[in-house]
Length: 283
Image: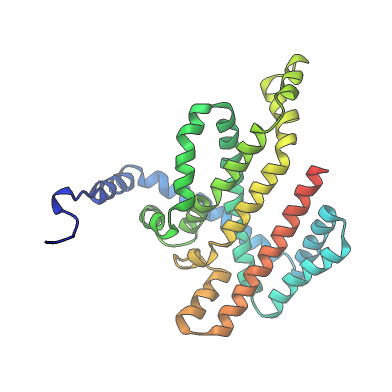
């Protein structure tokens, strides 16, 4: 007697998903191409801007941002020194490519995540509907949603942006909603009693009070975007992840370690600066 699952109960929705993706490509191929071209122009433009900026000026900018956020000269020198070491090992151009990808992905996260977080706070039905979607986005393996993204946008930097966006967006939405929902209702009611409109209450009362939570969500989104750079390199996006992947493919341990440590250094720089700005907001 076989212990296998009965074939009569087998069911697959793979064909339905394939037909849906094919329909998207046929029906909205031109629109998707326009979106892809627009994002590519933004990304390439940012990369070119970073390349045109002298390396020492970028280090000075990082040091000034760190000092402005933390008021610590030591921290500013350490973080700018970490980026300097990335250049010393010959990964400066790869660093700029990774920075451009992370900045564009994070910018899209902010444009989408904060408004959606506000929507979840004000619309309980939207919260019930979207929270399971966010759960799926956070737990679904990245290689699964890479397949339809590649079919819709092909290989290159643009699918890497969308793959990173899907992975890094949920924390910002969740923490924006959390920060807004934890505000004392009496403060909002007081602003309403003083004649503030809904937009004024949101802009002048709710968002400033929720800013520490929003900054924490932004920090998490940036860290998750950085964790995707190796996966992004597998679908045509260049950067530090490309050297990690090349180290794996050629068994070049040294090359992979150098690129991996460069990603860690970049993550430390972004994490310390964003955390420092979040602490300033709390103060």
